[in-house]
Image (cartoon, rainbow over all chains, first blue to last red; front, side, top):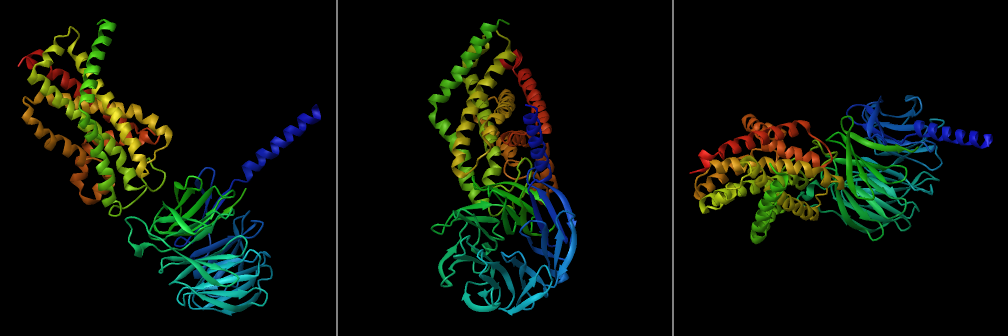
Length: 324
Length: 261
């Protein structure tokens, strides 16, 4: 009996400790403030603001969430922040003006697009060694590595292409022409489909990875909003393969797409110039960065409604959620 | 005052108002169509023109339809309040008011019965409107429909007391058109019903001041907050104060020397 009681007490204490110490936190890069805002998703408030390098844009976590990689674009470096101590522990040689990047599933190789140099730089995050620099189109931006780790994809905003890179040879193997100003790419979980948003073209190309051919092009139309303002940027897919969410920039809406038959099913009103997004741990919430209004909107994924907007710094750009 | 007599009297007034309301089906329809037209047609035209921003009590960005819905609820109450003043003038002209005033119960009580009866009938119209508004995605939280009830009732009392007060001043039915021009329209347009006050302040300072001293603004804000389960204390105090003032003035206006025209 005593043993059982102490076991119960111990379990409760552990549960309590874990719930206190491990709330879900969203990290948001503020492009104009040179800071990262930390939002506690439980209280839905900003609990911390951390100074980082100049013009932070793309951010992502290491696999174990102990490190946060930050593209400090105007500092021409990728910073590595120790999440526990909130300090920058290392700077990686990223090449000039890093904007977006993607981490290989091996948790070591970082693929960085260098907007000003028309290059993709591959850096080993442990040794800080540049493994390769690959020539791509003009103004490279979007960057993704397939979940199976075989292919890296980069988009070039001016050349209007999706560039396919073999991750075993670091060689450019193919290009796919998409609509004007491709901004962001996202692989499906099975690595078979690639979604590429075109900001000026106003479309999202859905590409078959095996053939590298576009098999569906999504267009968007929002009542009362001029088509020129519909500029797709960030794309996020739910793990269950049901939905894709597309941030439509100055249209201030996020499009909800049925990811099975590629039909737009809804538009959700969020803040001004919605840019990038990320899910919380169980994908019941989607967070969007709204650049001009300087806030983050939280969308309830079940209800498909924005439920809260939280003020962060100036021009929030990227967002990543650290699970409990 | 005998309680059962008071209840009997209240029932009498309520049933009369209710029967009159049922018989005038077009009145119910117009009370519903008017705000729905604003919601569907006007809001659709303006949604892109007006900037969106987060204001209390909303937690995130809202469509223009969502913004004007509480104002349109109050618009229903405003029209009904004024309509009741019209019916008082009508009653006076037709002589049926004498029947009411012959009651041995105190006159303020009779007026209160009339106000509450008008308010209750207005509330059914407001809830019918809120149900219809669901079709254009105006979806306050479920609890909001409950928390809005006392706020709507108080606003209904405010506006029917204003209606009663006006009816003491209007001697003929024909003068009622003036009420439209000089009361309903200015009250509605110079308030936060259609645009947030900060937007008005951007446009013009004295227009903003007019909106800020209009009790209807506070009535709208009281309902707006209540519809989202929140209490706007300033709005509540001002609405309560204005209701007390208008009711007292209306009671004074119905003193025998006035009513024995």
